[in-house]
Image (cartoon, rainbow, N blue to C red; front, top):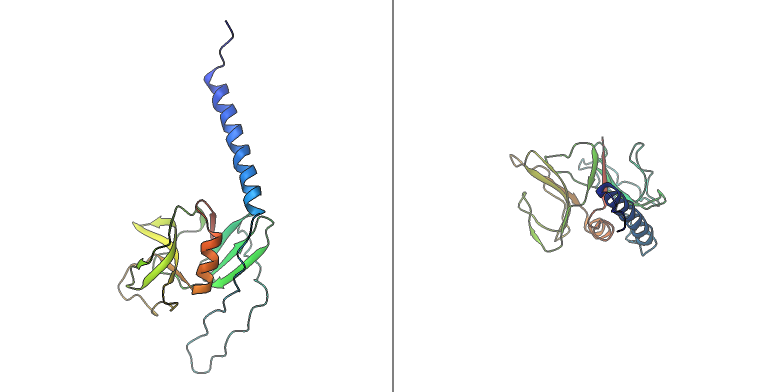
Length: 187
């Protein structure tokens, strides 16, 4: 009768195999097509003397401490998102409009994707929703307005977890942010 392997050996073998398979699939996925949407200009200030922001020719560098590998980086202080490929090269960056509830700094993953339009907590029709965090019972997600508008200047008295993007940026993020994609939130 052959010797029976202990359960820890089976579990270890399966874990090593799963890690190798995920690593292989991650490398293959990064070799596929990448979104090529243009970088959106940040929204100009509302003051009468404000000058439009200069057109960005290349994405600015991601903030220090924003991780490594293929990921979405969201800076709370800059209200900006970067889409970074596996070689740590920023492919896109764009200004965003945060809701009233911020995720805390840390590492998250895209948990749910919803392409169909719905009404956001601010009353605006939104689409291409990428949920990645929950804080104080409020879901935090990237989305863009169906009509391409920016959110109202304030969500007076409302609790909102939506991080709104310009329409073209929403298209790029939707293509890049597959289920399980890492989201690094930095201060």
